[in-house]
Amino acid sequence: MCRTKKLTCGLLIASCLLLSGCGEKLTELTAEEEDIITLYAAKVVAKHNVRLSQGIVRYKGNLDEDEEEAEDTAGEDTSDEEGTEEEETSDTADTDSGTQEDTEEAEEVAAKPVTLTKAMGIDGIAFTYEGAAVPESLRLSSYYTLPDPAAGKQYVIAGYRLTNKTDSPINVSIAQMRPVFTATIGDESVNAGIVLEDDLSTYEGTVEAGGNEDLILLFEVSEAAASDLSDLSLAVNVNGQNTPLLLK
Picture 1: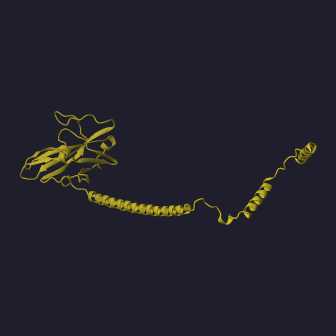
Picture 2 (picture 1 turned 135 degrees about the vertical axis):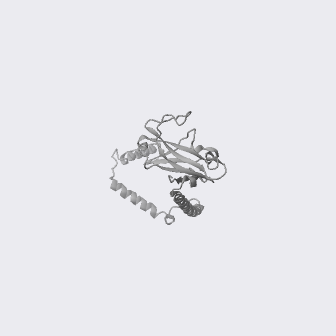
Picture 3 (picture 1 turned 180 degrees about the vertical axis):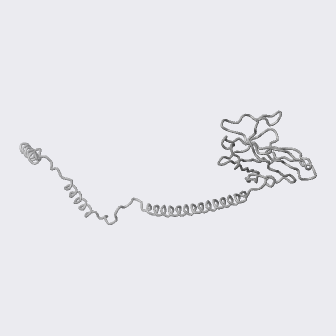
């Protein structure tokens, strides 16, 4: 019995060695052959897949409902955003249109030059333009001398006479109105500087009946602009309203 078992085991071992291929190399497949085998295997699996008609099956069925709700919500949000954007665009357009119209109206109002008398609007007080020139000396009075202008610059002084047209004294406070005077010569525009005496933009005082005061505006411009004042123009800004001035 023991001899029979040993013989049977020997035969089985010999059979395994004979059937193992004895080191034969595996057959290498081309890419095309691999695609054919892969396709065949997929068809075999699909043929025996009883749930093929259901396609991909999720573990929880309520995920589909969640996705539909998410799509509906996204649609509503997009609609709301589009509506908001349209409203904002409309509001912006209306605001821009209104601002543009207001600006155009303001420019139309300020486009027409007026006298300084009208621009300042001080009851009983008239202003008369007396011309502009480059001062011959920086000494404006016995106790006040202008500092030297910056390099390449020159001073231009514009003069106005303030007159009380009434029969009573008038207290005048131009400083309280805080006017800003601008001179334009060619393409160059500058605001008036401050002088300590007889300055039109900071004048405060009492003008007697029928009396007058000679006041000045000081501008620092380039030497090229100061050389030709023939196209000089003046403007004044009072309470945010910029008004070009008639020089008379």
